[in-house]
Image (cartoon, rainbow, N blue to C red; front, side, top):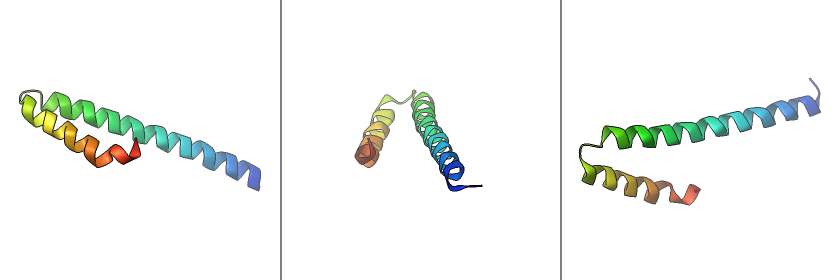
Length: 58
């Protein structure tokens, strides 16, 4: 495998794993919001905690 094809493959893998990570984050938030729907106060607290914790990445 030469350098150019290896570089292209790594670029494709990076894009795939980045998309997979974002899917996991969004799916996790939706799951937690649905799971905690019965207690609205806890779900708001969780969302505040999520945005304060991971806000530096957005």
